Image (cartoon, rainbow, N blue to C red; front, side):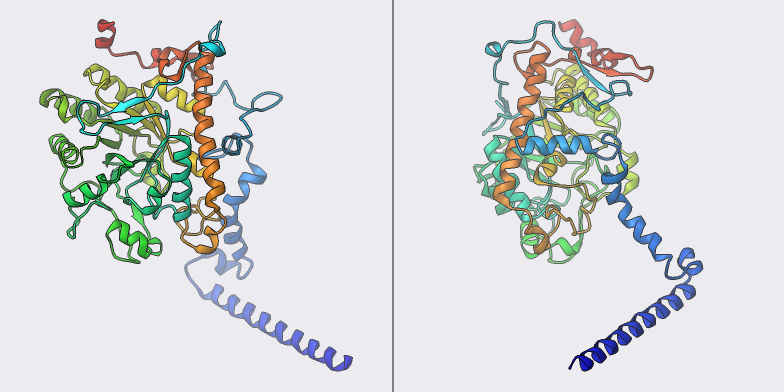
Length: 497
């Protein structure tokens, strides 16, 4: 018996060795005869290790080789800080910070000699959007809010967890350009319905804006406002891209497109080619829905915002957008061409204060609420945005980290290991909605809490009292300058003061 078993094992071993040898011979012949890859042609078989290690390198660097503050787009220190806030463990460290206060661009807030006492602190006031101009204005309670991430680009359990967490935290949730799904509504949070260039969710059979669909969407009480997306920071001048593998039946139904086909948005709204046409579209959507209507755009210079302000003052405040979301060139949760992601669109550091200046100069800062977006995931960056002139802050990737994102950089490949940006049921299984919703809420609540903490340290009773005098930026020579010196307030504002 033992002899027979030994012979069988020996035979199996011979067979396996033969298969392996045959496979290696086949691979060798294929490598040396192919003409596409020099490495494989010169180093058959072993050359495959080069491509294997290259693929794995981007994932191992963050664990073994990068320092806490080295990695891009978000370093380990930032990710760990968000994870702690999401787990409600507090953003507390010991033995000093690894944040380098001497590098250009470092933020330093001007602490007061006599900070505000606990009993003197006041809640950060809510702001009304669209008051006096929309039939149903929207009261926004949270300074920090959830930026647009389309259902399709992110998974069903991710949307459900974000919706529930946003409700618990009291912040709004932007749908992104993929339309309004049942999963956005599930949590009961305030929703801003984004209208992208393809009009997903509000389009007719020809792809044009449908008044009927607008009214149907607006009938949901949770939908508080509409946002006309002109461009996003990751890819200004390029429409959204959703690979056909991610266009499932439910996503196709929500968007109003065929199942399994690549979903590619036009690079701009076909019916909007001028500032006047933009203003007309805003007024039309507001008239149809009765809800506030805003704009989301990246900024490449000052011509657009200045022309927008001039047109509003020429035609009257009633036609103005109720809010303006400025996305920085460093934004981007979805797939984007690297040339656009790297080189097109101003950074939020420059775009936000300049847009705020234009609104102040034109006397429109009180009429149009300003929202800063683009890689703002920490309380210090959010407080800087308020100093620069923002009324609210939107964040997408910060909330992705709160869901458990590990920055695997596979968002566009449908292979996200945390289940956030994939429609693979096996991978989605790891994202437990009930657990992650709590972390989403914790992250938002703790962000608002820490923004207020910075304000109190600066001697302010609440975060809406921030001005540019309250933050300094380190310059190339190592010294720091106040933000109001780098971006002085408009002369018209000074004269009014």
